[in-house]
Length: 509
Length: 117
Image (cartoon, rainbow over all chains, first blue to last red; front, side, top):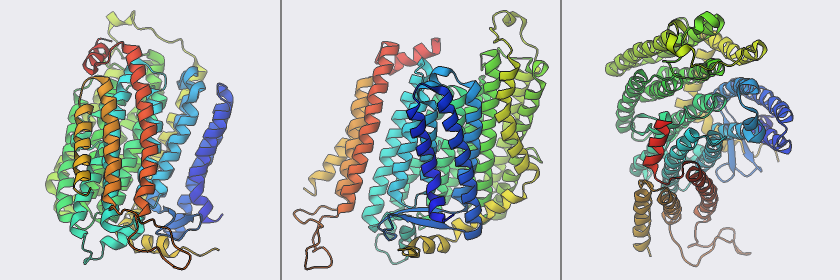
């Protein structure tokens, strides 16, 4: 398959999938079938793309064959293909979960097309090679998020979505302003050409670049929920049903971090002496505040939402240390976190499917009734906390080692303490939900859904699927570590990236 | 023009932010719209203003004659306006729905009701 097509497939498959779903409006069986096909195809397309960039390092194509700095560039390297593949895996898992775990009304009225369009937005952000298109794809992604978060319009959802829309609109405005500033300084929006321009030490506008980078720091800071800008996340992520919040919580903030790492290794590199200490402080505080927030919560979904913030701190930590090993650690951690976080959300969904509540106080005794589910939760939770030999451990090991080598002792100490508190909060969920005997006074009040074993088994399926991946990257971490190192290497040595984009213009007439 | 426009952009940004921070839902919409306008205008001004010259290449020449207005910011602007329009439309519908559901357009009351709920 030509690599042009491979680059286009992750965009076209979800788009056509969504269109097909729209043709079967109100017929949820047909929609589910179409969406299932699209999910499998998206997964296959991403896997092929990863395989291709593993061979060729960087592949790029120009839409309409306009030469590089003028046309619309699509480009993929190991980092973007890896993120796409992780997104595709959780896409499939969330799709499988939605078949039984989401109400018919939501499935009938737009869940599948919106999810697919959201995935198209993610593909666009990962594959674009142009700063303005990055903004546009982010908007595609966000508007689908808005619609998904408010799908069903319960009171909580409306309130959460209102906050989410307002703050994200502000952040997008800041991003657009930043794009304007960069264009006015360098006269180009193509990422590869910008990367070449900012590396010319004599460029007259170079000193103004760090001002532009602050716009992006704040804009993407909001979208990826870093320290002072994260308040919208715990206010909105727990409101929609699990089949929606699992995908959004698993992937969207990580896409923000992806653009962070991409832009701050490719373009905003002229003033790292100022940016890196700032990022180090922000990442430390993000970890700390997120985990402390989680410790104060007594709701399954809210605890998990706060942990998203704390884990964003780890991903930022790799960027702040800025060595190949550290960035590889970040990338490993992103992939690990996408899988584990989605899985934990899905497990909370399975629990709530039976007991109709997320409150730790009301739950209990789940271990007695669903021992397999308890085991699945235990493995995922320990993986999130970073117990060896599970996947979180390797990411944290790489980050800590890189931090110690670079002499960033305070940051490493913070990250290790935060791991400990993460373990505490996971233990809290374990004790409250799975272990403790249920309060007798609540026993009668609790409306319990009738057991339908077939349905319950179907809900286990996506959880087990994700757990297989989590166990694989934990027990057999070598392939993913190698991939992350390749990706980090590609991010820090950009010659290959810029050359492929800028000279690969007229290979075919 | 060159001194007037930056002042306008600045005041639009300020007004937009002020309204977004308001607890009245209708003013939040106004704020979103003004903030969107401010970013769009900023994008237009920051690309440099040239009057009269279009970037159309004449028959006899290979490149456009200087001075011409840079078409790229205009293209970006068009896209940004359309996107902003879409999001504002969504926000207006959302806020109307919030008003219908909560029977209130005050953000603080919304929160109280949700906590009681």
